[in-house]
Length: 145
Image 1: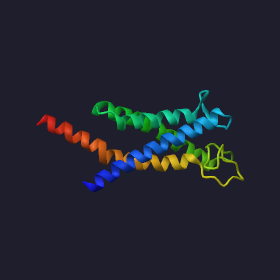
Image 2: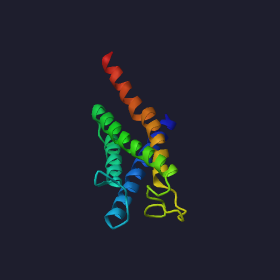
Image 3: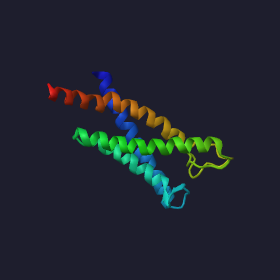
Image 4: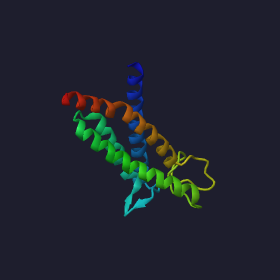
């Protein structure tokens, strides 16, 4: 039971960290730092909204909405992080904002945030499945008995 509590705390911490990091990059973009666009929308805004959906899924009690919100938010963030990581790896130009601020330039030592987000999203997925999802399935199965 104690490990379950710790994994829930870690899940909350990672989702909040992802949301705050996305919000920081969005604010930086609003203040002139470059953030790549998807259909004229800065991708950092989309990622922040995706993490906001995951955070909302942890806050609400409705098990049905919880899973939909989480799945939508996680899927959007994961697709963006995975695609951006692949492009960042194989492209000669920087695509992802970095830990040093702004888009990573060839001379910058900053770590691309798309790599960080991708790693966090994989851990978040595992923790969500082992925590809130498994708990909701258990509640649902007990109602059927």
